[in-house]
Image 1: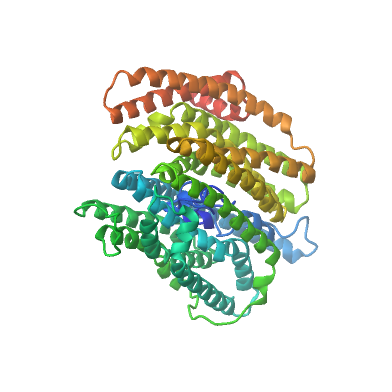
Image 2 (image 1 turned 120 degrees about the vertical axis):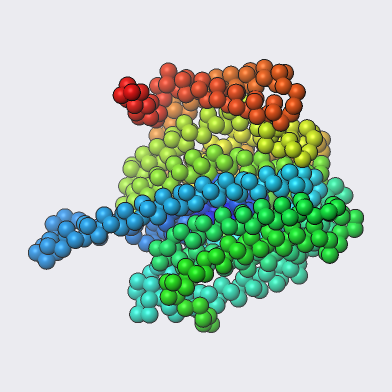
Length: 636
């Protein structure tokens, strides 16, 4: 995953891989982060990098701080949280109260300003991340080259997550903030030891990965004649150094955010994406084509693609250095181990287990895809990228708003309030995402034709559209599963999310094997995208059962009421969208123009019908919005 994905995955972006950034298909729940990868669903949204889009991605969107909310809310007091209640027994305390309140209000305004800036950065990061993926498709198509690049670009983010990614987001940042507040040197020694230890781990991991590059590629691709392990290996040699730069970016971002500097970490993935776009434009301008037989490391196309994309991650890391220097932190490493890094060892091990298990599912999908029709793995990842968009833009925002309330309720052991917040989050996700999911199902082919019909013929784009249509049902289950994961993390439980991922991965592996054995090669990608979405249905059901055992009844009746009404409205709107799209299809012969006309006319009319039906069905969660719109219209 690249900038966005990794960043997203780490929470400041995703990307990444997660966002909702982790792996493209098994995102590690994170508080923030845009999608930047190609193998991690993560990156809860789309990060600017292939890694985010195709790696266990995180998520999409960021919050102040570079830690998973699940851990952050349990270790560090919330910003502006009062450290006491009631009336003070000391007059001095009462006299100081107005100043304290004023300081709290100023802190809240600063936090809101930072959040607004990061929201803009996340949006730009998603747009540019989506843009470079489109440019890649236009440049190399959906064939063997794209498959090979996707596999090779998955490796750095996957290995980074296993080496240090989960530790960074779950342990290092909370302890860093504590060290800066409690240590006499302001955490200086801790930072120096952190940089030294992380540098050693990242450098060793990068060197070992380079030596093992052929074997790593084999794990993801096998020896299929329909793929090009040689090209993927050549690209891997050029892309694996990203491990070191992802680590530097993560560490620099963590240090900055611990100092309440949020802008550079948020905007860094945008630079990554811009560098990749420039790389692809240079690639397009090169004479000739990339040679596949034989693959030569001296090939200008190969060197441009590999070195250029790696330079994007390099830029993402080192653009943060000027801001980091202004904080006064020392960059001189100091060998040694700080005992505080071991405080949360159990949670860290479960986090690493989550990443490791998710990689097993990714390997199964990748090997089946690369052994089928050429381009299947690229199509799979583009479909996942499109499915991440609604979650990254809307679903993650809902979760970010609900998470502080849910975490506070968990800290107070107020299960009733926590259930109410979880139910509200799931219902808001339903009314926001289910209509989009329905439209994507009805208009999968027009969406693909409109976006991807420039490079390849109709075969690849229509296959991508069909894959999008058969898997769009997974958008809402994915959002609900991520919400449930955060509920467990809010209760300081990192074990249960990992066990849920184990169940999901078992289904994923078995279904992937069945798809490869039973479905024709040209349709394997349809089965794999369906499999990925179905595992989130499994995950949401398993999460529901485990949460019930911890919290009691979860207000399922109210959720099902909202789900039923929204589903009826969505089906009606999707049917209208499909009918209009089918009618427009026969009026225009040009594929690209037809795709955009079908998408625009069908999408707009379908959404209007859905909103009208939801208003008629009195979907409670949308009533405030409807009332506000009605009020504005009356004033005019």
